[in-house]
Length: 163
Image (cartoon, rainbow, N blue to C red; front, top):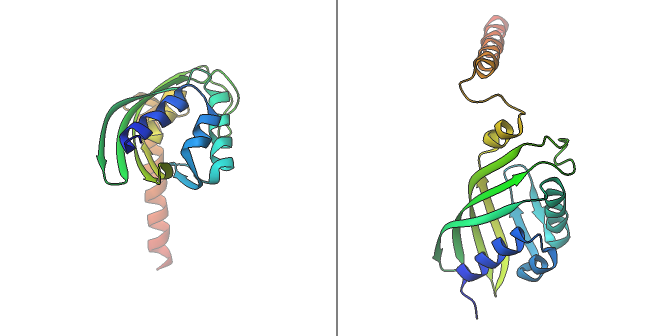
């Protein structure tokens, strides 16, 4: 029988291979995966999420950087790469931009199946790499932050006037 760390590696390998059937074999029927932008419940919803991701990033790959196992839970630090040259994803048309992203999963296994996964990664970094947000510290970034801060001050002043 595989250790939970070995099972976590099987998940990463299946993701890199875009092998939804292998993933379905690893996921518990009632699997829950919580991403920063969405929570998927059950094999079908999770498979649809990854099918869309693979269509958007045809060269999607995940590599384990490190893993720590404690009981039924494995914490995996990973590096994801891909290029947004395929289909639309999360409402965003293909940008042609490469993504290289670090993140972590907290995967809980039950009876040799992935029951729950809590995924952590920097969505602002994804936005910057896709070109949705300007690079941090760039003139457009400073202008965007200044406009946001001005809006915040206006809202505060309106609140004070209404009191």
